[in-house]
Length: 110
Length: 110
DNA sequence: CTCTTACGTAAGTGATTACTTACACGATAC
DNA sequence: GTATCGTGTAAGTAATCACTTACGTAAGAG
Image 1 (tube, each protein chain N blue to C red):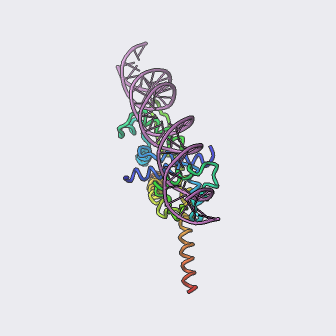
Image 2: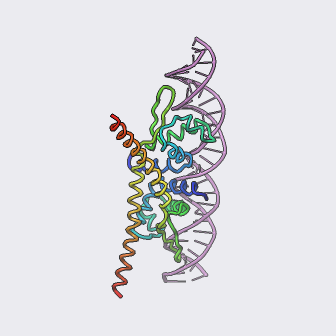
Image 3: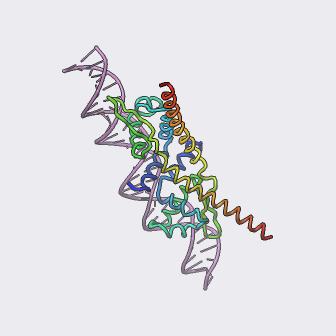
């Protein structure tokens, strides 16, 4: 899986309220699949499938302990997303900077 | 469209290489649909549809001038995404902080 | 006026998505 | 051993997605 594909799978994983909510919930610490599923109106397999999506996107890790699966945030999970966003936003701001610079120049040209 | 839906549509829009590339390309300034489409191996209608997705996600604006459509980045487009990410990452870091704090405490308890 | 250009959109298709129920497996309880 | 719990996965389905080609329209060129 190349960079583009990893970014795409991460963004795709984040494009779902339930999955974002799972990530939000896991910020307090690891939970098992059933503990997570208890908070949602959908079936437990559906939650397990959402977790698979998050796992493939590198955002969550599952560790089997006896018959329980402990789900936890992957610490470096959002780094790629964050850095793509940072680049795009820097450029965005650069455009403002250039615009401001342009206006400054016009002003001083008067 | 509520907050969750807006976030979902933004993330979904970003979950595609072509669309991310369009955003990347628009950082240099506005372009028409055909100017954009020239860089991709897919049809012009396909690009137009990608632009519709980006537009609905609030990331891009199209302005019709005569028969040309000028496509430009929406300045505040990525704010929602960035702030969601910031929150989730803050929490992520807080976990590290708490962990570090815990280790510090254990250390001083010895 | 006719011809072309730049565009949006409708209709169709094959692939993917988000669910469901049913099932299989390993670990604990008895 | 059998029964049960927690889990992952297979199979099926309705909806959505990323494209394609075909068409309709508005503006400029001759």
